[in-house]
Length: 340
Image 1 (spheres, rainbow, N blue to C red):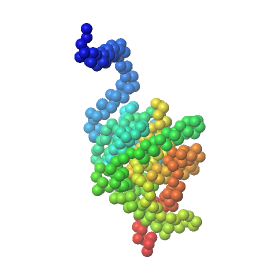
Image 2: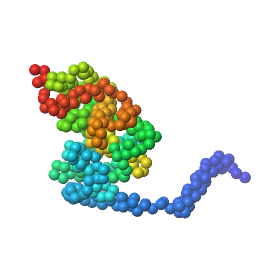
Image 3: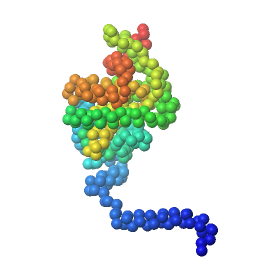
Image 4: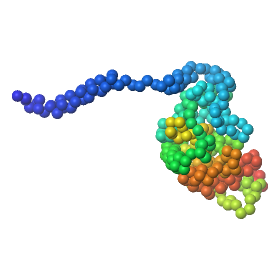
């Protein structure tokens, strides 16, 4: 006969027995179904990732010089983007020492969102030049294939980009909470200069606060009004409205890859930073209205994609177009001359 203590413990004993049986069954199945080995391609890629860590920074720089440009690399005028294939699975992007925020941004996005971003394998520095080593993403950029993909694929891309931009806007870091604009920074008391097509060809700032950034834009408007008068144009100054959010800053077709794995990848985070919410829309529209694949501007379907994905901020976008000459041709004219 079972005593009362045995009866009280029987449910626990039963559950423990079930767990032991499940563990034994799992071990048995593991021996019958071993973990599949990596494919030859995956194995070689893994080897490349390990081998690249063994090289000295100088060796990375030397290998970059003799490596071919990545196939289909974006062009900037007559120049090819500084991205080269240093192994069949690794690309290296050459930049200045100040551009160290790019890998920081990529790691942040990979850790806090579901956006497919290339894995940063290493950052090498040699003679003031930074080499950003990343995994190569096989596929085609939207610049290459947008005219070929179906309307349903375009709609899928639009939904994906909308999701990506919303995920970026939900990221919270101290810099965003402190409302300090610019590239990612660790020390908020020492903000970084800003680099983005919206600001023209030169670095501007740094800006200790959101208000300082907006003041810079409005100063450029005064320069534009003085030296580039345009009749019947809206000349209203910008206002400090809305939050600052993380933006890619150059979300254009050449920086979006339709991967062979079926995912939509985002590359080239060199213009990223913490900026007003309208910033993403303005940079995308700016690029779309300029030369695109030999055409005067992007296809109508891409403009529709921009509006759906980033939201519509036409007032702010028109402002950035109004000051275009003030951040390029007249970039070095101080606001004091406009007021004199």
